[in-house]
Length: 132
Image 1 (cartoon, rainbow, N blue to C red):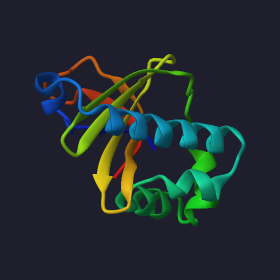
Image 2 (cartoon, rainbow, N blue to C red; image 1 turned 180 degrees about the horizontal axis):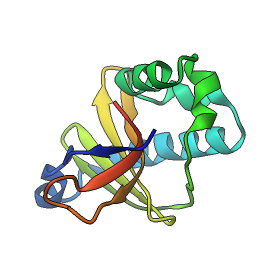
Image 3 (cartoon, rainbow, N blue to C red; image 1 turned 180 degrees about the vertical axis):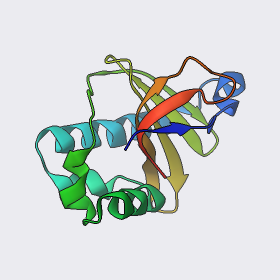
Image 4 (spheres, rainbow, N blue to C red; image 1 turned 120 degrees about the horizontal axis):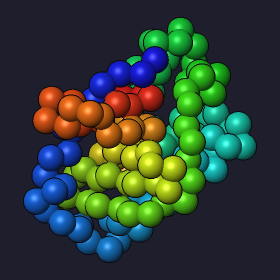
């Protein structure tokens, strides 16, 4: 299920940190997903995914998101860094993985999960376990 993700947040490098409220919200969403994933609470984990990411998972696995979410591999770990740029965010975890989030009408939602840097950062900077 692993796919290469293009540079979906290049502005993060230039924009620096967003407002502290956004950083806190992004951290909470990521931690909520990780706790639900670890506890095998599929409905809760799927509730913080972007609608496109949820649809992508359901399409790939031919199952509803709460049943399919366990098929992805997430190392997780504590949040080390949160970067916010306008309506996009990147969360770096202690495991070396990154999560990417987008600010939707319903709030911050996870757009890409368990992303790791690739050896070709200019072409495809991240290889993600799940993305929209």
